[in-house]
Length: 200
Image (spheres, rainbow, N blue to C red):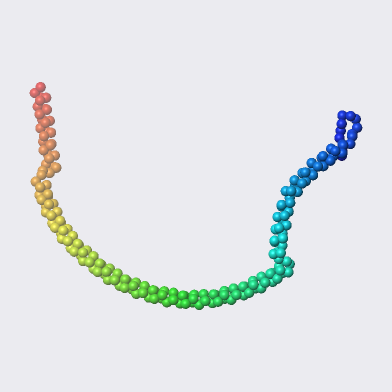
């Protein structure tokens, strides 16, 4: 349905009056003016930005020229870098050769000094071990002599004590003698019992 057609209580639509349409259009124009008043400063700022920026923007020709210059600079930089790397590699190899020769000389000198020290240490250790072995042997010989003397004295003491013990044991009565005495006592006891039986 069109905007200027309204539904009334009476049957059938009717056309809105011209005054109402003009009033509505004036209200719409006020809204449009309000929006345009807000947009105008923004458009002015955009125009000022474009005016100040566009002259400084590069064109296609400028970009192509800049691209060629950049490629030339990169090629030159790559060549210079390769030359510097080659010089650096040569210098490093030379320095590494000198350092390697110095390290080899130092290691050879250290090896000779270490061998000399090891030889001196081995000689000293052998002398000390020989002296210690001689001292141990002398101490062992003295200890063996002392032990032998003590064992001989101990043997003499043991023999003397065993002789004395044999003599003491020889004075005690033998088992046969003791059994004989015991038999006599038993016989006497039996005789006594028999005599008591007879007396009763």
